[in-house]
Length: 182
Image (cartoon, rainbow, N blue to C red):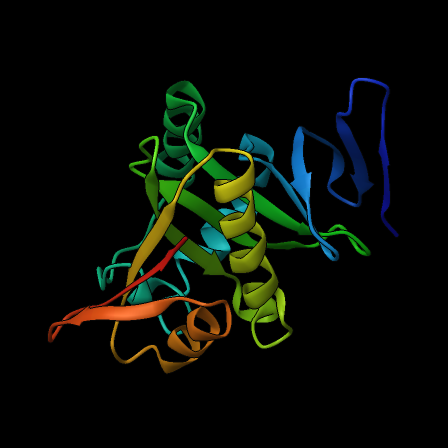
């Protein structure tokens, strides 16, 4: 059984069989809570990025096993950089969905990247997350354009991006380039 609550400072406190998890929520959509990346989610990150068949092969194609130390270093780097990267948790259950990021943000644009765990794929979370982060980029960060690139073999992702209003503007053997702009 998992209990989730927020304290007065807005910190998300969640208890589960693995103990107490404390995270800082940044924004929410209908079914997703977007929180700062956290060292407490390293085991979830590892399960996701080390799943070559369902996740990792679409993140650049490096068939490489990541370690807990590498993931902790990644978390610390992202927090130190104040990167626009969020872990996604299902509001109802508190389950880890994946991570989403606006990479290389400027005043007017950023590049969207998303990874969803195999268990949480095909449940509508990817579409909701892409829409929510795009809206966050436009309304909260003042961006006028959000771009992305994906593997041309990742037809499910391309379908999600099109549903969210992204248009293809270039294609190579290795990538499909898409954008959403005002």
